[in-house]
Length: 313
Image 1 (cartoon, rainbow, N blue to C red):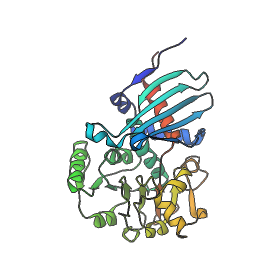
Image 2 (cartoon, helix red, strand yellow):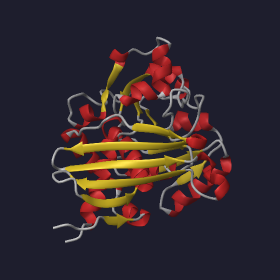
Image 3 (cartoon, helix red, strand yellow):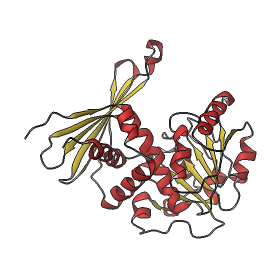
Image 4 (spheres, helix red, strand yellow):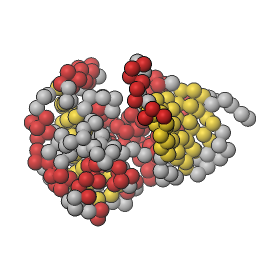
């Protein structure tokens, strides 16, 4: 019997993507695997872009995220990025749901970092430094709290007023959160450092990292972007979300090109960690680093989680 696809708005998507459940959904998806073709990128007139990110898991499910990037939308009072997820039945291709894609993207990105951190951060990690104050940064305290006993959150941003705003928001959510303008001191004292910025030059210096630190790099999705310096890359055991990170992320492509990091030194990816085919953290004192660029398998897992929570009887 044919049903029209359900339309799921941002608020409904958010309400049905709690981090503990989402992290588990990602873990299950990475263990099961999926077909994830390279994303399709189409240049439109006026420097606008269309992105298509498909993924499917056999007869179980199929989906595609459709993203439009219109840089001039700010002058119209609109977001530059719009994102929509189309979820279909795997067996018949029948559309099941059209879901707000921004919330899926943001929450699965934060959840993927916490999922990696579940294998890579020290079990007793309690202090979190968040560098950045945007959409992803605002979710990191909740995501990390699903996997580690976070008791202290420090917020830093290139524009200090935004760090203050985020810290105020996090305090309202029940976190012991403060803003700082001293990134070095905060980094030296943090157990976990999550960077979700648009930095094009390193903001985190490897010399600052104490033994046992876990460094989570979320921004830097292009080869010309960078959040951590060469020393951080050299000192850490480096893990990636998927192989796409090796081609797209400046934090890896630049040191690889310079001969400072070899492909054989990459410790493994999220699928290997989740399936426990590769070891995560080995010792309490080592520095670990996770670099993500995002994968359509995460979008599919998140879309299924939302749909199954609200699907019509």
